Image (cartoon, rainbow, N blue to C red):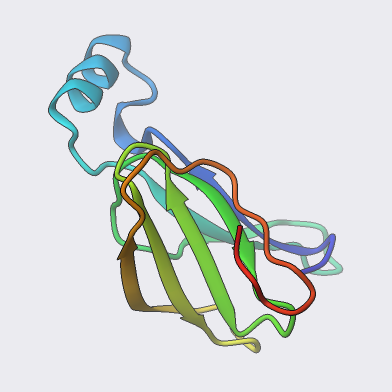
Length: 116
């Protein structure tokens, strides 16, 4: 990505501003978080939009070396979401959800495209 284009995870989504609601969402494991895509144009006013459907505690995010694949790890679902990424618009399309079997957190992608 670049200093003027990036993705941000919001791990508690709609429950973040209310502690009780946040606890309920966490306890019931309600998918309420998402990924946001931001672009900062030369005018300096950020343009941000939600880039994914709701997921359970979105946390780690990274892209492939060529920028065409985005990986998202919700920290409590034990899954890895794989999205095809439009390198011109930043739009995402869910390709696959891979069950890892354990808690996932931050994610790293090597120069050769291996995911850790």
